[in-house]
Image (cartoon, rainbow, N blue to C red; front, top):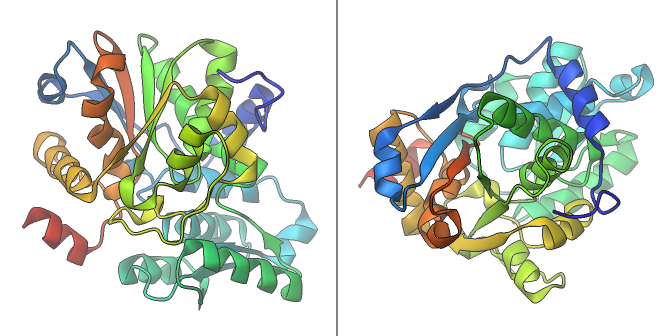
Length: 325
């Protein structure tokens, strides 16, 4: 667990975010499925946090509401802008609709059309530019400056991490027996948020990370102990498709994770199928990555109760057809 001064926020920030979210978001379910336990083996008991039950089918609605509820009246009137492959934009658009805040989302060219449609339906203006998420971020930064809008990065934002941390707070309050947590990492808000919570109420709790092998920049950086950037991010898990670490989370990930593995797209696809068959819940690639990583972490997790997160269920029909085929 990293020292408190390495963590980007404190536990009081998480408690404050939870109070702001309370009027809008009930706690999501956390359930154990004995068949998943049997598949995991090694006397592992798995508790699944169902963030796919959120209003936008993703945990990132926590992040969007945590940011927008913290803005002053002037910033709300100016509106916010972000880059997103979908779930961050959906969270901001949903929060913007509740709080009457204009939301613009920059999406990469060729982005998931179903997520695009959902963001528009929630009232977001979409700007399509950039070949991937990281290029879309640069576009969002440019537009933010020209329009005078508030930029909300999906990771490099204190309130984003505070919002994400509220899910770990719920997990540990619901099931105090948890002996380790496993999170998918695209930017690291879930994992770093978990470190903030654990540092206060469960010091020493092991936290593990899983990233897509086709978008492994943060994983590679963690193992090399220095930030590296990849030239592409190619994975069915679009929520994990990032090409570099981010300033606000990388030091905490570097010093706070107990282990970090990658999973291939076929392994992610198998986890999606398993969750659908066993839990009858639809997970997108990023939402299934935690389960996909368990076999590679089995030695570290043996004999423990493990918390994983179905972080989102917004898989598009074309990808789902390929996965099921």
